Length: 208
Image (cartoon, rainbow, N blue to C red):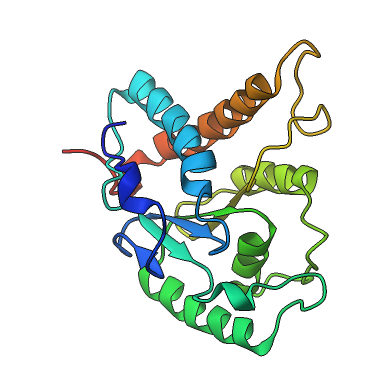
C-alpha cells in the first residue's frame, strides 16, 4: 500500500511513532500492537479506496502518529485491577499532549484504549473493563461519527479484533468469517473516509 510501510510500525518497540502534528492518531494497547496490521491496515485500505474514487487524492500515511496509551504492559488494567495510580498518571500526561497538538481523530482499538481516551477527556460516567463489548463499541463508533466536528478532537473506537457473529455484523448466513471481517473493514473504513472527504480542507494529510 502506498504510503504505508508495514514493517515500520510492527512491532511497536517505542512508546510512540510518527509525527504528533499529524491530524489522525492511532491509540493502541501495548499488549496488542498487531492491531495495526490486523485491523488498521485493512480499514485504511478501504479509506484510501473511497477517498481516491471520490476526490482522486491519496492520504499520506508515512508519518501517521501511533501511540501506546501506556508505556508499560504491566499496568494495563484487567478485571481485578481496574485503573491504578500508574494509569491515572498516564492519563494526565496524555491529556497535556493531546491539548497541545489537538489531533482531529483519535482512533482507538478495543476497550482499554477507548476508555483511556474517554478519561483523558473526562467523559462520564467512567466505565469498567467489561462494559465495552464488541457490540457496544460498534454503537459508540456510529455515535462518534454522527457528532463528528473537525474543530475539536474526535474519539473514534474500532474493535481490537473482529467477532464474526450476526449480532455484530449484519450479513447473509452463507458468508464466511473472512467475508464478515471484510464487511466490517469496509463499513468502518467507508464511514471514516466520508468524514475525511467532508473535512478535507481542514486536514493536512494529503500526498503532494
